[in-house]
Image (cartoon, rainbow, N blue to C red; front, side, top):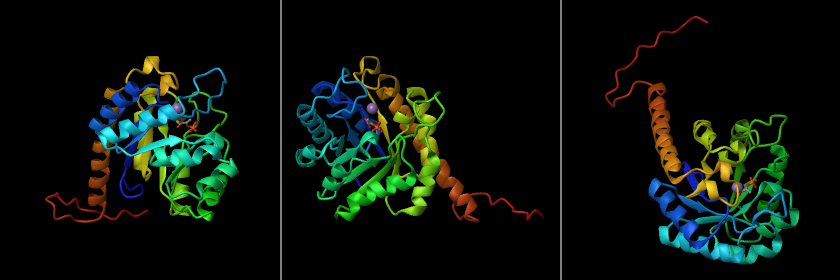
Length: 270
Ligand code: PEP
Ligand code: MN
């Protein structure tokens, strides 16, 4: 999977909960057309009493599900001591919003030969996100993917405020691929599809979304998890939108020889 050439969809549960749960999710998202599988084994939970993830056992289940479906995997790394074994288990290491400025972690990730998915901190500016990426890149690891996942604002209706202008600015200021996580931004499953489509329309290189076979019983981020059917519907909507964007490009790029009726263009005097 090459991120930055085409629209990449990463999907999977917030947390790996069991072998069966991640297997079922992987099969469903693969069937619907996902390109990569996500799943947290080390979970940065706001409350110490919440499910903290299965740790190494979770990484094994994630790897198995990835191998079974042929989907490369991504999982969150929380501290420098986890980097070495995670680099052996997963195909891409994720830095979560809460660790975007964990500088020892960023430096350790700069020394491995695996792509890093760097999420924007919920209180971080675009500048700070780019400087965090710089920590990784300056140590020698050039494979960094940026992720806009919503920031904290005065607005409380959504879990976070999805800053899609960050995508536009980042695409201008850096060569790094930029993806969008509408799940953590929206916090509600029913708002994910429109935000994911907006991400595609504004030029993001992909999305990462949370999918769970039984959202009501998810141990983490239950409200924002798409069902496999909801994910399939999202993929169909994205396909239609990608087609519409491509058609629009054809129309605006001048007379086409592909059987379109050419619309006569009249200059208007404003
Ligand atoms: C996640 O992707 O599971 C996650 C914890 O996201 P964030 O770091 O953006 O809150
Ligand atoms: Mn989550």
